[in-house]
Image 1 (cartoon, rainbow, N blue to C red):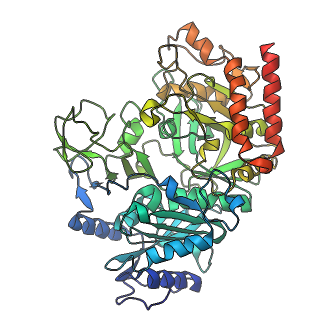
Image 2 (cartoon, rainbow, N blue to C red):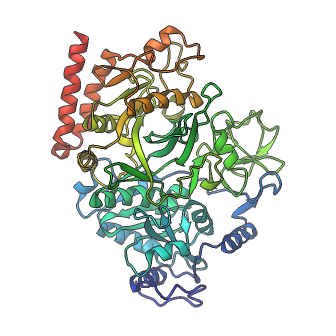
Image 3 (cartoon, rainbow, N blue to C red):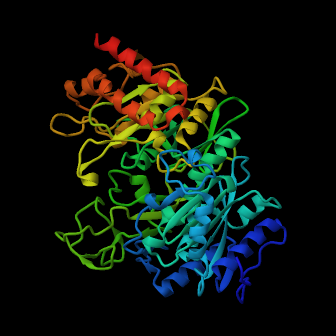
Length: 601
């Protein structure tokens, strides 16, 4: 990395207390990328305002109506840069087998040889923002610190929302050299020169050629899950793609649940569930909608913290019906990306409440009206918004010790196979349920309906190492305590012969959560089946739903034939991992096969 630092090298100087390894690394990256100036972010409100003002001047952001949508802005990304580039995302472990068959692998040597020329001079004419950030509550023993170097003011401003950024992070770091390093540049935004590379053994991330959040906001999926899962395995905890919610009963007692769902399965909606009028006295508190870091406490219970400080969620489909708490959250202080713009200066997307506007400007900046051949908002359009604005944000959101988890939920979109809810027999069986979970594709997504995509623990895109080792880690974690949470599987998406959903979903999912809570307290009836414990009809509150008896039977029964057909697909998935797959999971597969044969007899 030859070449001296550019003129006006430091716009804001780093704290003198920083470990030399921090400033040495920043200097090294500056010599490589050659920015015109380097700005050390302090995370202040004044700094955020300055970043926004600069982006309003250069057109990176567009202002929204200050009265209807105060302190909120619209960002339009390059049309080729609108989603996670999973095919260009690599796990760069020294040994290929440590990345495993579900990850793209590139050797560290090849990655550095390929990306170093792309980074060389990539920041000329730009500012390098040094963004220190803290993942997890301040003062938490479970919090971890990182620094992202980026030439994107949009990324720096977004990290102010998504993380605990600036001084609080540097205070946490103190004089230590233990932090995750992240180098990001927009480059020229060419997909041919776009890479997101993770080096778990070095606790390092390099990302170039993209400004999209999933590729550029390195604390999120890159650190919190891909690097985080590697660190968690080393240190004996879990870094998971899970929501965290608190379920408060009418007596005021709060029980916490973590849940993993693949995309398009209502994860954020469940995290912010609003109880329907029929569920009087119940309340859901939101701790997190996307990521959970879980550790065993001294009392043997599993505790979870949300490492994030904001929400980065999909806009289309979000409405007062599906998620009123999120709609309230985004009414101010929000950055919208690739949504449509109404003439009154407010954002719009498909699935929002009310009729479509008579005219709008689409996410590409072109005129749009109902009947246009394209969507007004990009299907993956997003908003970045502070978690503290959520009306249901938990009082324990910033608790340094986290919240005690009583139940873990796995779920997917299955039209036929999986019943509404069932409980694992034990932790090992629960890990098997998580390891084999999947969702069926829709015609809108792939052109084929009902194709099952296995997505263990909803971590296929995010596990930073071999998933066979990941399953083994889950098994080890559960064996450490007799107080491990109960594990359940849920499925809101069973359909009838006409394709309509059998279960109403949304707020009514609270009825399922209530049965789960009662099971955790030893107060709900269940029947043992080949796949797990299912609720009895009487144990699940169905009052006022007016469900046909045929629907209830489908929701609360086991389709032996369908589950038997599943066995072969599960085996094919497990076979990918060869001898590295834990023997316990093969044993669970055999036991399921045996139980299904007995059930069919």
